Image 1 (cartoon, helix red, strand yellow):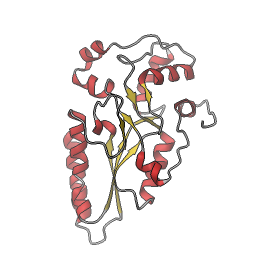
Image 2 (cartoon, helix red, strand yellow; image 1 turned 180 degrees about the horizontal axis):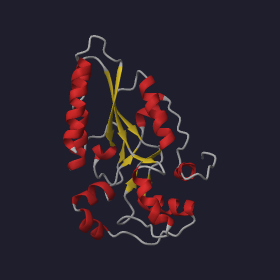
Image 3 (cartoon, one colour; image 1 turned 90 degrees about the vertical axis):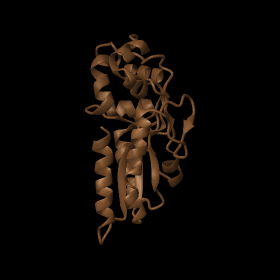
Length: 222
């Protein structure tokens, strides 16, 4: 996992730095895993890296683009949250259980989830590409993070199903080991500070409308 991200980014950055005609901007993928498990702390791009496997991976991933930065290329590290897409990613894995009425909170459900609608994620990437003042880390998350319990209830409501079967933390740890704590139980309350300051407007800043659009029951954005 580390080599596929860090080494590839470093190789690309070196190639771009060596070109006679360099690109004006390089967008690199990163993740809000950079922040680690931070409880209720509100995290913008000024927050330091957390501790653990994912924060260290993201730190190395972003640092790998340094040759491009040193060559004068504007580099944007997109710290991506949970992207809401019905056919891809985390939501795709949740939907079968929730549609059967077998969904529920993870652990205590108090951990913060920082999400973004796919439509807003694509728009934000284009915005970052076209906005010269954006550089360095940029949080790609909606401005309304929610606790896992709220996410669970909102998703179940959209599907007209109950959500009464929690996944206890100990069971998740038995199944996934350390990854349970870092991927499912970690709390990251992330705010897109740089996007907000640069004037980006989210089409779906609230979870209910975002899930409604994602799942096909189109509602007006809140």
